[in-house]
Amino acid sequence: GAGVSQSPSNKVTEKGKDVELRCDPISGHTALYWYRQSLGQGLEFLIYFQGNSAPDKSGLPSDRFSAERTGGSVSTLTIQRTQQEDSAVYLCASSLVTDNQPQHFGDGTRLSIL
Amino acid sequence: GNSVTQMEGPVTLSEEAFLTINCTYTATGYPSLFWYVQYPGEGLQLLLKATKADDKGSNKGFEATYRKETTSFHLEKGSVQVSDSAVYFCALSSNYGGATNKLIFGTGTLLAVQP
Image (tube, rainbow over all chains, first blue to last red; front, side, top):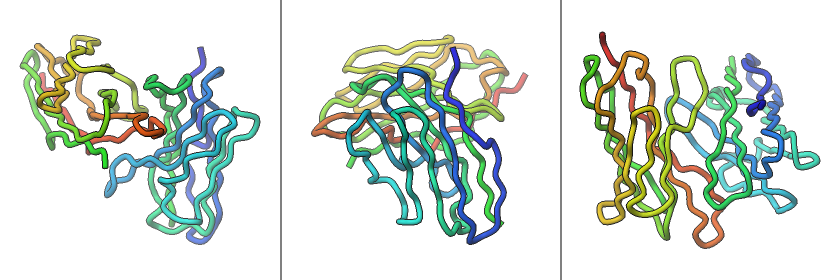
């Protein structure tokens, strides 16, 4: 079956612009996670959605970052007024209902801020 | 807080050599433990997992045993191949105290296998 799909695969933008990253999880997966992979910080958790529960936003690095998940499926991660330190690979993962089910990752969006 | 420490790389081995990548963790409660692999130019893939003490996860010739007494989850393979060259990440997740099962990753270990 289809895996986690992320778009775009690459995004280059100028400092100060807003960007929107999209994640389409595996069908039937109610849990959705965003992570960031960068050279200086490794792999970091950003935000988590589970069904209709309030999202866990504890990993978002600043108020320029936000995410939503519409209809319990597709999610978008928005970064406003991008900075050079936002350059990273943004990974989305989904899983079945929690209780330590493995997370399945998309190929990521490589974001470069000029 | 919860954390994962894994050996730094790069690890360079000849084909058919024995591989060990060390991983230790700190966590409250009873986390699940994972190894993920990232091949060049590809996304993260789950390699194996273990959800309770003394469980052994295995896949593609790789193994790791959940050792609660030493808080370790070392990755081993008896005979590596060139195609095993990748970055390996140790990770844990926990729903203890209402936590959300987010993955906490180690820094990753680059493995390079030479023919």
